[in-house]
Amino acid sequence: MRCAAVARIIGALLVAAALGACSAIQLAYNNLPTVSYWWLDGYLDFDGAQTPKVRDELAQLLAWHRQNELPRLASLLKEAEAMTPGEVTPEQVCAMADRIRERLLAVTERAEAAGTDLALSLSDAQLQQLERKYAKNNAEYRKDWLDRTPAQVQEKRYDQFLDRTEDFYGRLTGEQRDLLKQQVAQSVFDPKLADAERRKRQQEALALLRGFVASKPSPAEARAALHGYIQRIADPPPGPWRDQQQALLQEGCRNTAAMHNGTSASQRAQAVRRLQAYQDDLRQLVAAR
Image (cartoon, rainbow, N blue to C red; front, side, top):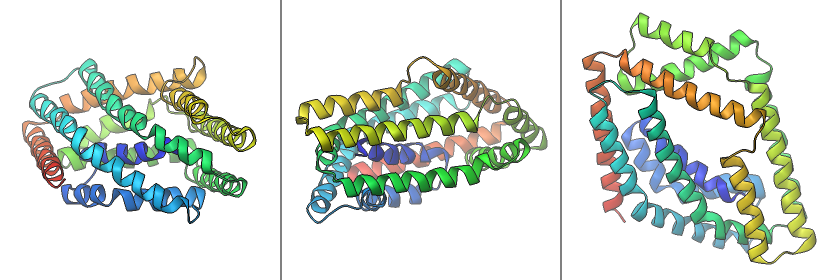
């Protein structure tokens, strides 16, 4: 069923401009249909009839994304480059985050029809495989987050943020590292709440797909149900999880602005070079279509 899964994989590549080397982005993007196929296969164990169709749909999705979305992303990077030499406000950071989110939702919407067809073709055995994969993921999440002490969770998050920030700006000073530690220590991030939400969405997905197997809905009915599921993930209903998501978003915007505004001219110049290199990467990817 993982209609939104491809969008998440692409989303990871879209934000890779803050995470990794340009050559790695190009390689990963061009290999996305193959990587996505094997990633999805790990969840659903495709049969002989599904495999060629899934591969073809993934290739078509990438071709559409290359032509329609990469130019938009290059434009966003250009705007970010123009902002980087100066100071930024949390509101500016959030506005950019909202626009990136819009692009991710566009990919999800594009993948919806193919995702519906796949969901309607799944068997009971494949849903059992999906349930086993969820259980494995949950065990890994517990090991990575829930079995750690609060201090260990903070240390893990600090290391993650430090790697990402230094990849973008270059080496941070002691004062900047102290700011990052303070931001992590004051974060509202709650791994237990995140785990509860993940499990809830997993059970909702399994119930949805089992309903498809049992009731054989029309493609239109199935797509509407799948769309509703995806929308609840993208825009959670009122409750603790929605509150947590909103708080984390605002926190991220404040922290990003504070960190950027504390960088030196040379660090900002490094960030500009990074953004320019990412734009070059995207232009090459668009030209390769």
